[in-house]
Image (cartoon, rainbow, N blue to C red; front, top):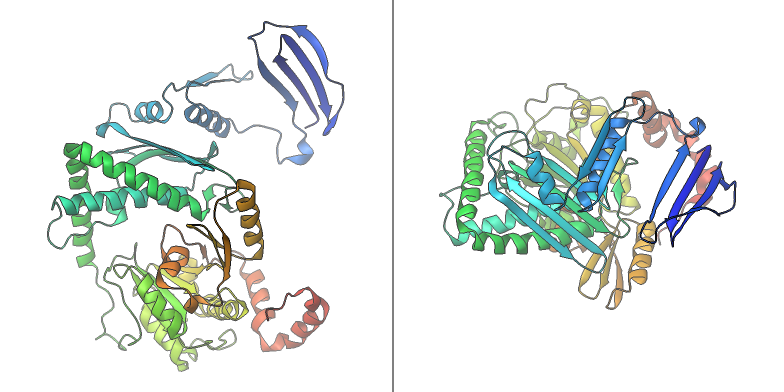
Length: 507
């Protein structure tokens, strides 16, 4: 800011201090007296355009942010006055999340009408939620971390979804509510949910620069357990509403199954037979199905046990695939691994037609070490060069398996790399978590047992995926040429001679 004026009322006095360009421009001084109970802070600032794209405020975003503060701080009154237009806004929610969600859904049919409210507080995490189901109409789905809106949700919302789903499944099983052949999927339970979720935690991790999506893994487990236990108790105390919510989810599941039966997948009688090593999934719904490309039979065996066979398929690949960056699309099928991959996904290399696609997500799953990164690079090159339509459609993803597991007593954490491990250990020390600290480094995916692989890399609620995109085609081609093209071998040698000392070797 060019200038900041600060006024503070406390201890019967009003204080003033001024700052300019980040430095103190005046000393703290008493400018008046006030009543003992009259306290508060007033801040006035002048935006410096050289630090921002524009000095103008986005009033819509500001209103959303201020309203969020009122929602998440029950009893707080927030006022906004726009001097330019004369508009005034005021927000006050005496009962926080409950009042807000009921207000947003006023006049709508709710199930349950009084909402499912929950809260759990632990040493370093506090979660609050308000949830209801709406048979029809527009939903309200909002989530926050440390009072900051997370427009793209993240692991905290995934945890809430899993907790609600598991509790409702158990309720249905215990009361024999499910028709034969019907199994509730998370989207069946979640499809008509309206909710407001607030999480307060230390050191939250976010995806992307805008911090609109939470990626902290521990948040999913914490909220899943809290929501599951609370919702299970609520369902058994409100069996009438529980059965009506279950019926709503069962109707969604039945409609989904009917739609899936109408989808025609690529049959083995049409063209080459599917690879024998492919562990296929049951579902045919492209909005759910996933194919994991896994290195080797060892990791493939663990992945097959870790997956949800309803919608997750596994294709083990033998070693490093062919470097196809400079190979014509017509020639890549000479490689058995590429041939099997193309048959499994249902698309031909070099073709724009992806109507035969058999999976909504194709996920590259390789070890977190240098060999694994090499394999992931070769597969990335294959899709960029020979299956660009899949990349353009957003079907290709790269999984981010952890390199470390950190055990603290009975708590388990995963760290993506050395830097994340360092931050995690600092957090454990700072929060004085009880129990012996044990750090395990994974040499590969095959070293993980199925439950570890499921929790850290495969389960949709706790894994990390990076979507493969190609927004700058010329820049991408230049980079991949540098990495893989034979004609750039001399350039790679020169780069290694210049930058080689920056590498950290794995021994």
